[in-house]
Amino acid sequence: MDELTQHRARFLAGFVAYMVALWLLWDTAAIYPLKIFVVFLHELSHGLAAIFTGGSITRIEITSNQGGVCYCGGGSRFLTLSAGYLGSLLWGVGLLLIAEGRRFWHLVTLMALGAIVVAVSVLYIRSPFGLAFGVLFGLALIGMAKYLPLEIQTIALRVVGLTSCLYAILDIKSDILDRPQLRSDARMLAELTGVPTLVWGLFWTGIALAVSWWLLRRTMSKSLLLGS
Image (tube, rainbow, N blue to C red):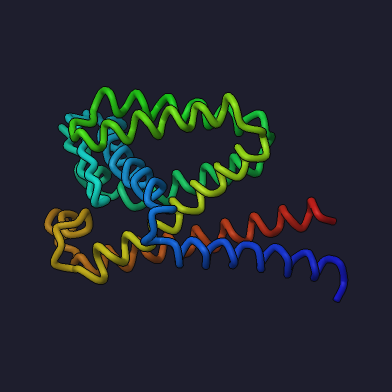
């Protein structure tokens, strides 16, 4: 086995090991804060879509059982409803791409993300659990940027990014494919467009899988270049 093949095998083994560990630990306390944070990103994505299309955020609620809702006023209802699952995926991809770049931006990203989380929590979150979680998690991100080594900051970005990507896929499956009767984003989008909930679920799942596959290939290619 040549060196390039060995490097590819090591990369794939490490990636698969991480994803398997994340999958097996998905319902444990170790992953719980990350899952709540991704719910936060999901709801924030709804709000940002509303703002970017001329609307506003009224309030956000996040509960301890991983539930969340973003109340928006105005804007494009179609884009706002579509932004939740796909927003979680895009946040994950963005964080992973930043983790590939210069380490200076790892610090800046964690600091900025922490400040955004605290600000959004104080301004918009009205559920006591969600407010407390958002402020504490945001301060934790700022603390990572200020006090932890750059290597740990890189790992933190990758962990949050991968978790967000995986959550997007599992959340679509749980809300739409496993529980089609749930009044999910896709269910409301089906009511708006006349396109069945299942179709939206399969469409979003396809996008999530395609983006995840592209990201895996990109990351592996860059890893091989750095290792050559």
